[in-house]
Length: 331
Image (cartoon, rainbow, N blue to C red; front, side):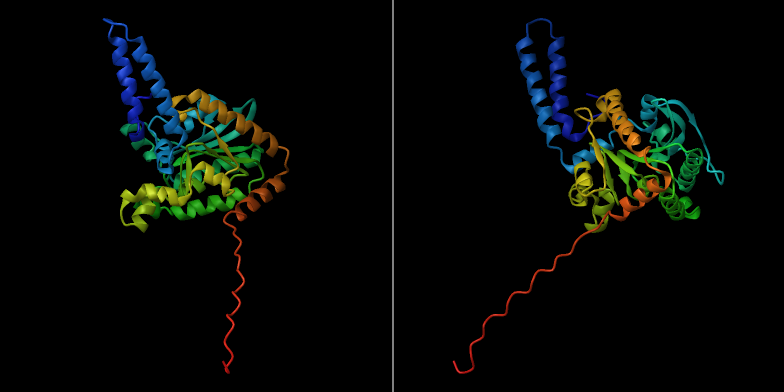
């Protein structure tokens, strides 16, 4: 198990600690006890991870040891050249991006980035992009459009930064411009939700021809805590909000939001970075191969139609019941 563990993982951690303690006792043969406990751990792990609730999956999506954008860039891409700044105000460290090669072919990679300790989280603004982050991302995507290379975005943010400074520099306008301009790109765009996909912070770089979601990632208009604070006036109802929001990968696929669920190593992507990256890389290669066959105008049209189809519903009006027979006046 990783050094950090979640609340629902505690029974597994406690048993594993007991196994380690038994292994250190060299005075007697405890192999039978160790084998029995090992089987019990495996059974418990299967039971827990095969029946995760939406709230537990959200906890996994936020795991402090989960791979972030730069971890995937390191494992999936070569010749990465980071490009900085929005050419208007400053460089936002919560969004990283630049040219790279994916399996020998040039691409533009853009993604949100969190930190792993207090110092790096402050540096990355805890993964909350500011207006200049979205403007930088769009600048890089426009550059990719000009040189005709695909765009790959990695999404892992609780949302856009909601502070006064963001409002002063027009965060809503920055996200809105990204939505408008991403629909007009004439190159393939693949968006991957690798962790948290929160609200406008996610959609600001998430307008893709394909939307891929890792098995334990989520994608929603608001975080469960924010939803609970609005509907129940108390953040402690976040687990109920997570259930109601239909934000897990299986629900996103069912609703037509996601195009594919990327399986994670058993126990979460944080348990095996290389395996998680390998499975993501296979999906990226497959979708990019399909999208490269499409012309620029068709890519833009397909992206537009994809998002226009989201949220459609059919209203069925049932026939009114026949009026009850009334007694004749003479009866």
